[in-house]
Length: 290
Image (tube, rainbow, N blue to C red; front, side, top):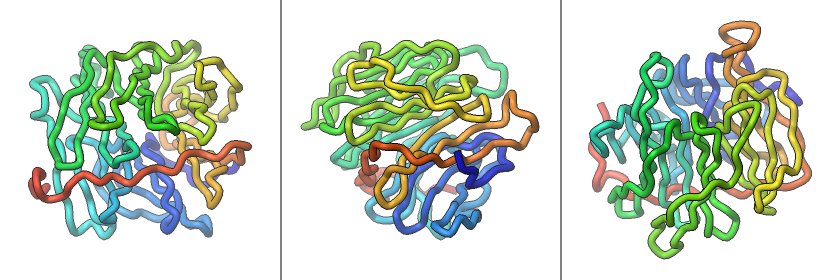
């Protein structure tokens, strides 16, 4: 694996942007960072901590997680809240997110502060529809993590890191509502974190504290495991012109230093699915973020 960037606390939310390159967050250190096509590393959006997931928006800018779900312009001058923690009585923030083929956003809420020592309390899964309306579509998620949609748009995958399971839901492609979940895979020797779906329907899952990325067939059978030099593998995404560069990001826990969170790249045989930009309405439901 090639090292693209290192020296971070907890790298999360990788997303490929054909124009800007690879974007990622540092949950603990804050900010959205960029590795451009020449390999230059820079800070795109400073300050904001807790971003566990990101997605591009068709209007430009990014949808980011954290204490709320917000749209932010690339220059950082404009920001609109799309979903806040009042969505449920127990929500304290949001982790990973993904878009479907229509541009709706699926995002998981957290009911406890992950790094505080708080007892685990189950959170929920929510859908932000195109008109900005919010629907809670699943519950009982102990620690919501990676989300991704199958190539035909008929399935949503959802990692629960504390339950050691990747859920799968059947999706009503008309309105985005979900059927009750069932296990896609139950994991061992690590916890399922971020994930990405490839063009052939395989599901690529970062295994936190497992030092690897596990690749599952659409039927849940393990295809292969890719070793990663650091134990806390937090997320993955596909990038490059042909979407055959797998970007793997890590955190520093159980690593050799407190700031060894690293971004890796490895060439793979199967291309990833392009990420559909969010098409959720900006400025209608949301209020300006302070």
